[in-house]
Amino acid sequence: MKKILYILLALVLVFSVVGCASTEKSEAVEETKAPVVLGKDGIPRPDWVVKDVSTQDVHFASGYYKAATYANAQKAAIAEARNALAEWVKTSVDEIITSYRNDAGSGENLQAVQAFETISKQNATAMLSGSIKEDEWVDKDGGVYVLVSIPVENVKDQMVGLSDGIAQQFEKNEAAVEANNMMNDAIAKYFGTNATK
Image (cartoon, rainbow, N blue to C red; front, side, top):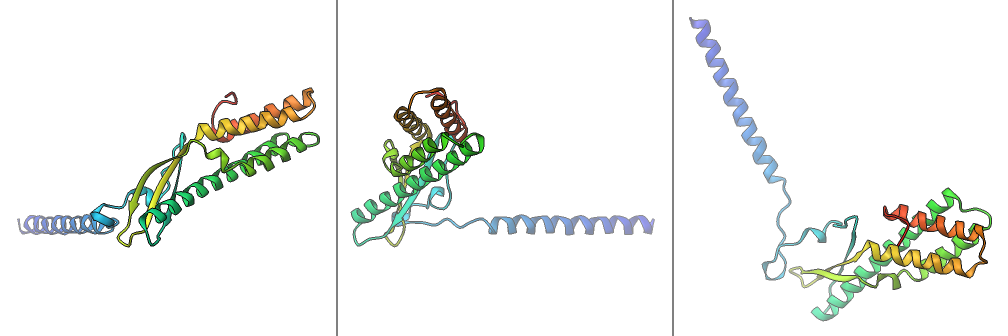
């Protein structure tokens, strides 16, 4: 009988220790959550300030600027966000060119690839037509964060348009048509869509 009593007492102690440990663990997890950062007028900092919120259909970029006046900070933050979008377009062009070259970009096709690369990078900022300001947050120090977006389809369509325009500059033959189709396929592959507009 004493043995059973000792075993029950030992089980009670084990369960109480385990229960306390799990409570301490859950409290420790809650303590590691990021604190809420409040900006001007007590508005909590949105997630997009610290992380990329882009989706397959929409690319987002944020910009930040602090200036003597709110209006100047806002303009500069929008410009910085649009520059980040333009950089994304340039990176996209690089990856599309790499994909194209890996698939077929050699010989006569190389001239069209180089033209596409040069013209696309020169027009990266112009490709941002359709970008809009989505949100804004002002920190406690008066620094302005701005979120801008652009539909991925807009950029893809403009790249296909550039590719088609470049193809028209070359002599019409089967090789030129094939090169243009391959470039459009590389664009579609990058954006994960169909090659047709």
